[in-house]
Length: 317
Image 1 (cartoon, rainbow, N blue to C red):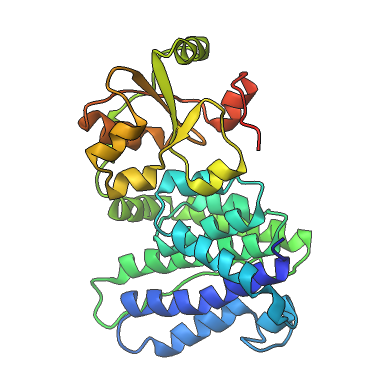
Image 2: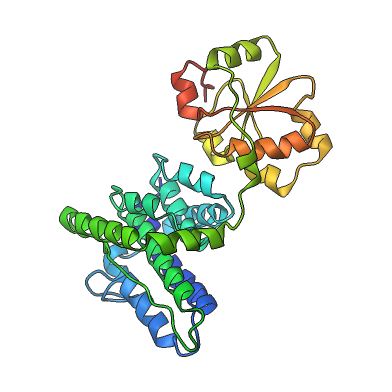
């Protein structure tokens, strides 16, 4: 079981590494002091080694027996940086703190200005998750200011930090949420411009539409073998729970490229192919890829949990 302390450690180490990379890519010469101040501020007044709110104060002394757990969180976080926006938003809803943490962290690394989603995570019951969301919000503010100052010679991008700092009480969390919400509303127009820069064109998946087949029709077609069901979520999500009738074919794998021979082992061009994910978002880009490969694709708007509630049988572990 992964401990809160190790998730926290992973997050705060990532803050230092991530901010150096981001600051180096966006700041003009002369910004080194600001980079240092930015990292110190995000880690707390005590900085890396201690003091109230500092890294060691938040994490405590670490033993060597939990290295595997730490490595697992780090690996998950790095993998999250390869996921698309829909996948990350799905992971923010996970009941596992380490998944929410990794998704919130990756949003900042991918420069996605998902302010509403991140502000919602500031209320998370896990302090490391709150800190990952806070970090990504600060990075968004940094990228926003860099965009505004890009034509001003010698200008160094700034940032804002409305908390919540590590281990604060509920009242301070509420204040932070209020301040970030106000900030997002005030900067709405520029945040939309930033969003357009990150995602300049519509994704291929937006050309697809969800199937109009009712869930009763879907179940009937699966039972009669007229169709098959494909789960395009990631392996970690599949392992946490999946439908008995489904087969796994992650969107990330499709995006990287799957050979025709490999697809033929899983899919049939004589059957319709229903796709499902966690919330109905990832099935759309997956549908485009598989249609181009010659398959009859029917993306479902209902996600995994909704399908279980609708009566689709859950696979036994």
